[in-house]
Length: 570
Image (cartoon, rainbow, N blue to C red; front, top):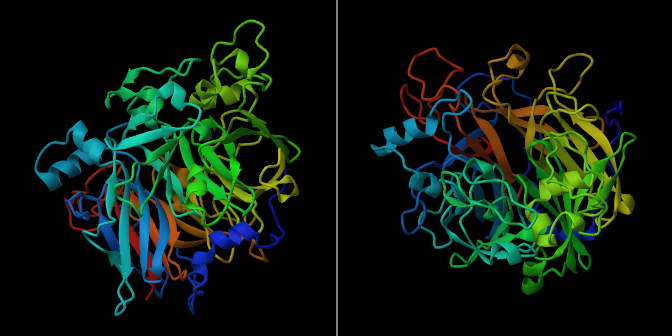
């Protein structure tokens, strides 16, 4: 096992031209008192959002609230939040994922069903599940008098994209899957692109449709959603400025349990998209576009993710690594562990083209194809984000890999990956452990979080980190009691405090913090509060905290509701 030390020095900040353009929305200037200046909160088990003195939050919108012109309601389990300005610092579009329905699995309460019955007065159906997943587009505006952000209800841009919305399929796998698909679901993280669209990632699609495809790229129809499995597990793109537009599934980026996608765009160069496959033994991915990024050229920007090269990372013990291309000519180097699933390899097969009938078939089976070429099975790679200064990539590994070697911190870690020559198209990289999860003590300064998940860079290069301790551990296991509820943390990436986490927010019981997104002036942070009460359901007895939840309304027997909040200074 490698014993690489954690990063101690600060990061160099040299603004890349393309990233400068992508960060143009922050040009309005930082607030007089930025959100980064605060006294950390103490971990809490309270069924509320706990913030430092001088901070406040508002609930922007809750599950079940109508917000579109035709009366569609906010979906369940809001997750990633993306923000695009709308011409002024007080007006913006949000893209928000709705990941999944909280059902009674692995000891959890039947939270969705109990809450649905309480709020709607009837039992839920699979048709309700399909309407409550996917993603939402929401226009928000700041009140000039109070400074609070709120929804612009009924706005023409407000939109729901769900499990029955028609999609276009593009890229190499369209020849196998067909050029049309129905719906999206299990949408986890995503990206607001420099060209003004939202990307959303289909993660644990196997909960509702078959996951397996054969080496010709064919997949069966089935699962409780009764849909062809090969149509799900992709990165999708939505145009939030045109509510009548048809979203796209980009098969060139591969099919896996996509946690997220992070874009690095520099004018005149290919776009790079970094991704994580959120599973034990999942892979870290990079897509490099065939076309070059031309800011302002709408048509060419919309083609960027339709063709290119997909790579999977091979991490080396010494801190180096290589990107292995998912290509039919790539030589086979199968991972030996039987847990690293692979298709049956024909006798005397030497390349990926000897296994799969075509590139589209390999992309539709990207996880197993990557195991065929020796990509590293990692510790649940979740969010990846590109540093706005130097273009390095930060990766949240939420857990261990289950294989001996590099990923053995049970509390998760954040790594920093630097491309060779700072070139997003490079085939080699270096990696460093940046921050490790674990309880705080004298020997682990800065280790005050566990299970890092969604992340965000602010304009100063600070890293905001949401945590996702599972409901089976959260306030249940003795080794997780020091962390209390999940929360939101700030980790500087340069200076004396680089790698040391401070907690800005503790969130309600049995919830996960997701998102986050900053307003154009950096003065308000949007945060998703997902699945409050997921383990023990609706709290019905006083003094039962931290078991169950009644957030955000409060009051015993009140169903908890996933909601989007906005955090700002008082």
